[in-house]
Image 1 (cartoon, rainbow, N blue to C red):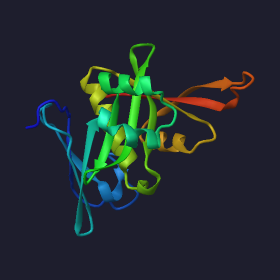
Image 2: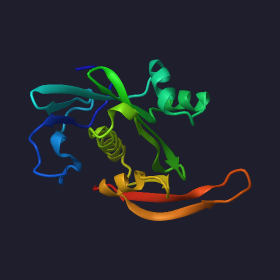
Image 3: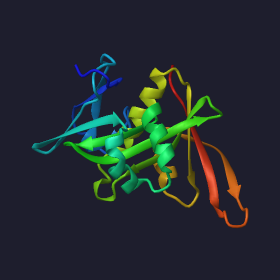
Image 4: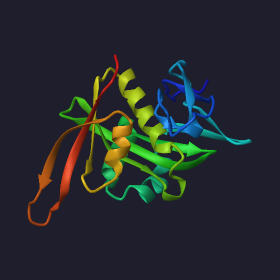
Length: 196
């Protein structure tokens, strides 16, 4: 066991799903996995099989040593907020065979509802199910902390809305930003209830 790291599950490769997504886990067919509950002191471990090769995936809370990779993907977060994400464990980094490939950060909307602010996978590493894994890990972590609902948002002209809907999120509203100098396409909000 590794002290100081938390996890609520382990992914272990199971089989190929016949088409598209593994329906019960909402993972790409090549990454269909079985969930196993483990003690919270174990690190998250993912074992994926691509043909004859294995890919070891790990999700960890963001740490100061992840800063260079983090800011390569996230150009919106101020330095002081990054330090808060590290301190408050409100961010994750996904590693594939020891190399970072994606990030997720969140905060608490209304100070009581987890809100995913950013989910981003390195451009050269997309279409492998990494975004789904990060989102699923966050959902399980939030459920373990006692939260019952999650929120996220995306602009209506971005394709992320389709990704979130495939993960079980429902449209729940929008916000128009039309102040001079701050105009952008409408921001749409999505929510998901966590099974208790």
